[in-house]
Image 1 (cartoon, one colour):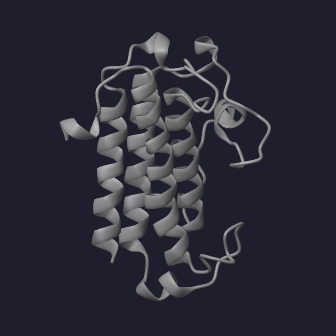
Image 2 (image 1 turned 45 degrees about the horizontal axis):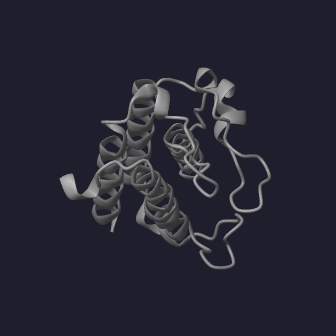
Length: 169
C-alpha cells in the first residue's frame, strides 16, 4: 500500500513539473477565462500547502512559509477568495517547484515511517464522512487532491493553446 501511494505521489510531482516546464514566468498567474482562475502559480502553491498539512496529519511538523498563507490556502469550492493575477505577489516558478518537491519528500518519508496500524485510525477533517481514516486522508491528499489541481492546470494549458503535458510523459 505504501509503495503504491508513493508511486502515484511521485507521478503527480513529475506531472506538476511537466505541466509548467514550458510556461513563461509572466504567464504563471494569468487566467485566460472565468472558471480557470486557479492559474499554475496558485495551483502549485496550493499543492505545497496541502503537502504541509499532510505532513502534519502524519505527525510531522507543519512547514509552510507564512508569507504564502494568504496566497495559497483556500477552502475549496465556495471559498469566495480567488487567486490574484499579480505576478509580483507570487514566488517564481522554480521556487514553487523546488518547494513542492521538498514537501513531497517530507511526506514520502513520513509515509514510509508510518506504522501499519496507523492507516486505519480515525481522523477528523472536513471529509471524514466519506474518508474516515488516516489512510483515506492520505489517499485523498496525495492522489485525489493533487490530481484535481493538476487537472486544472492541464485545462488551463489547453485554454492557453499549449500542448498536452501528459502526452509528453
